Amino acid sequence: MSAQPAGAGVRRASWAGTVVFVVTAVAAAIAPSSVGPVALIVAVVLFAGGCAVFLWSFVIVAGRSRTDSMELAQIWFLAGATTPRAVRRSLLGALAVQVVVGLATAGTRPYTSLAAGALVPMWGLGLSGLWAARHAAFPSRPPDPRRRGSGLRSRDADQREQNP
Image 1: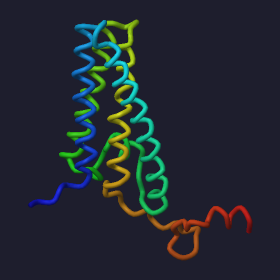
Image 2 (image 1 turned 90 degrees about the vertical axis):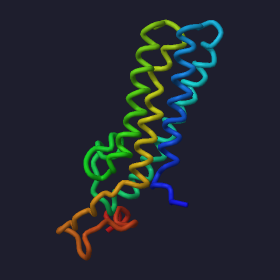
Image 3 (image 1 turned 90 degrees about the horizontal axis):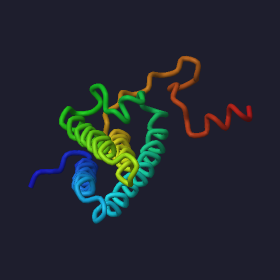
């Protein structure tokens, strides 16, 4: 049995949320009175979940930033060589589908609950950040010549600078 690639669960979650969103949003655009409330709940849950995952990934990135050199585009948009092409294509593909379907269905009925679909891409963005925070191959932070030793910040460096 072959091992799962790094972050396979994140990729599955991204596409699972995308599929549920597309099905409910398109159904609500066709039959808003019967499916509209379900589409609204799905959109709000995916938006709230995306916000929570985004914050979770931010905390992980903050910890990694002490030793790894990273840029925001590498984290939430998976830019550069830090992310394998297949992972980038999968996660950004799901994000693109969320953006297109969210804006298209919101545009068909702009003053209804379908407008909440425009918030769903937060799900894809948060999961992209989580994948990068946990699995991306960021280069090591170069040593800071102004610091003694390795030049990397220790956990208590800020405290020492505040209280010399």
